Image 1 (cartoon, rainbow, N blue to C red):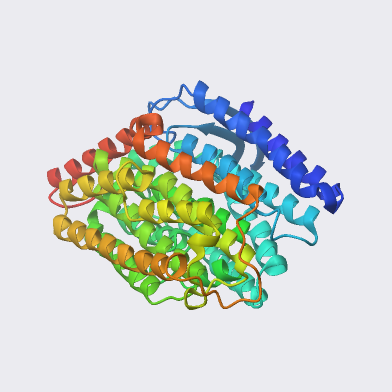
Image 2: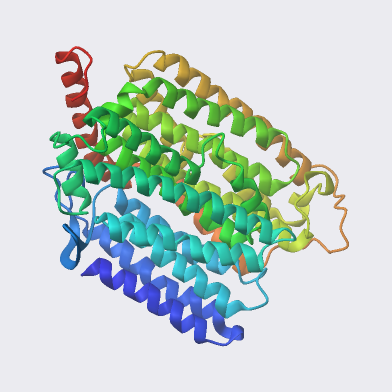
Length: 519
């Protein structure tokens, strides 16, 4: 019942903070948010799962399965559990929430109890997404994440907050509808009476399909695959479905941007791994070339867009589009380094992107501007913030001994070892994205941090407060730990992705033995 306790404590904390007076809401929320951190770290230390949650032979940690309701022929269960893929993401969610809440003490000065309650409510929803194993339960958590983020952007955001919040909600909600239709098409085509995700995944692998709506098994799987792929690609986001992200980031308050980049985007890549690449490896391999091309397009185009920006938040926002392209490239490689590296990169990017947004937020709290052309010489006035910002930027560039280097290294090794057509060329092109990343981050650092101090602002530039610097320093230390000792969670990730890679190899062998016909 540990997962239920984690969810219950987080939801109860949200309620307590909502009822608390504004003057104590921030510190109360930070204190209460430490409870899920302690719980998730304890679960991490005690983790004894093995294999993959969806595939036969997997042994889940902290699993609970209880009958919930029956709808027609389908049984819905409360089924939660954790494997080596979800465990690091659970810890990431709890740690980033605490740090984001602490970073909000300076910029959030109105309706504070509501703001912090929504942050905790979002944390509970994220934990549900990463632990639920019944599709209906998972989908409830998946959709509920949209609610607190919508209000965080729409109420505490910038001048165009209403536009950004509505655009975010419409894009992601329509994508969820498309994904839901795709998955339900699979369920209707299978001989199952459950929404249990492991049961459905294993039924798909066993080929338990009939003719549905006049569609044969392979046509149905292909249609469902791309319906879900597009739905999840919006959440990632990949080019050209990315346009909601810069608006959401720029208008969102910094703590919400930290959670959006650090965890919410990982919902998309996590779902792609769970549904598309685990349940239907044959279809993913059949379309590996266009998927890899989309990944490289996201890497290069996202980096080029970042290069053209002058708002620090937009630069980091487009960087996320580029970084998520690497994750998709790793997934489609379908080997141990590729899929394992893609999962590692989800955590690494969550830490580094959260750190980058926090640094931008600390600068904005003092200078009240994020425009590159309006700032110069900040390093002399805010040395700690500048040092952390530089370290975070180098982490984004893939500096060795930092989390970004390990994730990208694994992905590139997987990409060069992939066996789909032109895999090595796609990987080489993706590697060129690092050069562009270095270009725009070095340009931004040189303009903002160095040179003579010449900030065009009416505000005094002073060193950041202690409660602003502690979160960024703590997060930087986590980035370094993940980069220097990647096996702290890469081992459990590899254990969980190995069955996925093995299933993909089996699907490929079936294709060869049947002359290219997917069964």
